[in-house]
Image 1 (tube, rainbow, N blue to C red):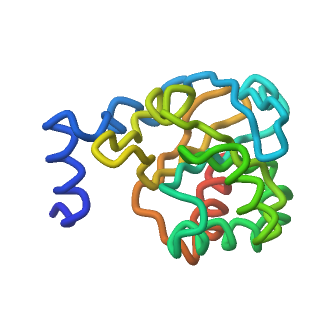
Image 2: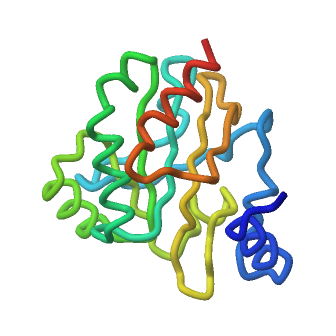
Length: 172
């Protein structure tokens, strides 16, 4: 049975309002990207190939209650996620400067990638909500070879670190 959220996402995707997150599936190659983080450093998916799994989490906006809870959950689980062989990368349509303030305010130890306009990552990963110009809340677990191994669409913002760890355990 479809949840209300799934039904709404399906309707938005069918109307072309939500770019098709359904287009990317587990087992497909993850789209490559290059983007700047909150410190102005360039980050590429290729930087992690053959070294680390990647937790690529998309969120709507820096500083909002749900996005803050999600970021803090991943911050609190950061060492366990690293120990599981993964890097965390957050992505929203916010700017580098806004990411820098958010990361500093909440002491986030991982990169936040800026994608104003959504063309670098948000649209290629199919999580763009054009009506309001934000990313939807979706997390992709990408293995060392660059293959999507899990897609978390039903994110528990306050316990997202545990969801991520459960996905990473399936890779071992």
